[in-house]
Length: 295
Image 1 (cartoon, rainbow, N blue to C red):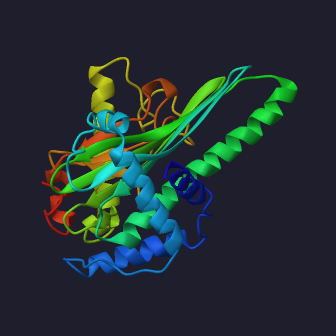
Image 2 (cartoon, rainbow, N blue to C red):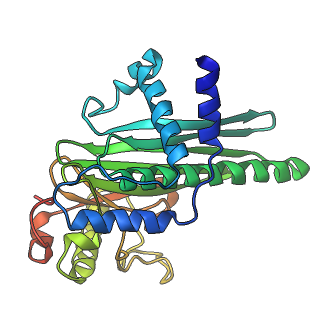
C-alpha cells in the first residue's frame, strides 16, 4: 500500500503543467459569474493527475503531524481549506538556501477553478525552484550567496472570503519581495478581481488619490516613514507613485474593507517593506457595483 501511494505521489509530482492554464482559469471564472450555485463539474482534463491529487491530499489530511501544523491556520476547520501541497528545500554549503512551499486550495465544488489555481501555484513555484538551482550553479563558479523563501499566508478566512497571499523573498546582497494575492468568494466559488468590484475605471483614480493622502499623512505623523509621493523631498519623477494598476494586488479583510498591497521598493524604500493601505469605503462607495463584498 505504501509503495502504491509513493508511486501515485511521484506520478503526480511529475505531471507537466498544461500551457492552457490561463484559459482554464478564465473559463472557470466566466462560468462562475453566470451561476449562483454550482453542480460538480465533470471534466476529463488530466483525469489521471486529478485522481492522484485527491489521493495525495487525502494522505496529507490523514497525517497527524500535518493535521497538528494545520490547526494553527485560521479557518482550517472550514470546508474550503488551503494546504501545503509540496515543498522544495535546498541547503548547500556556500550560502545557498531555499525553502519553497506550494499552496493548494481544496474542497471547492468549482473543480476547474480549484484545479486551475493549484496548477498555477505549482507551475509558479516549480519555475522558482528551477531558476534557483540554475543560478546557484552559476554562482558557484564566481562566488556569492543566494537565499530564497517562498510560501503563502492566509490574509482572510471567514464565511464569505478566502484571501491567499503568495510571497517570494530573495536575498543576494540585498533583499527583494514580491507578493501576489488571490481572493475567493467562498459561497459562490468565484475568483474576485479588482475591476469586477466597480462600475467603471473611476476606482483607479479614487483609490490612488486616497493612497497618496494616506502616504502624506503617515509621513507627517511619523518621521521614520517615507514614500515616493509628490511633494516628498528627494523623490525622482521616475520613482513617484502616480496610480495603481487596473488589476492591482488587493485583498478584502475581515472587516470587509478593501486593502491595496504594494511590493517592496514599489512605492517606498526597502526598509518600508511591502506597504498596505486600507481604503475607506466612503471613498469608493459611489463606484462600487454593490456592497456585497466591501462593507
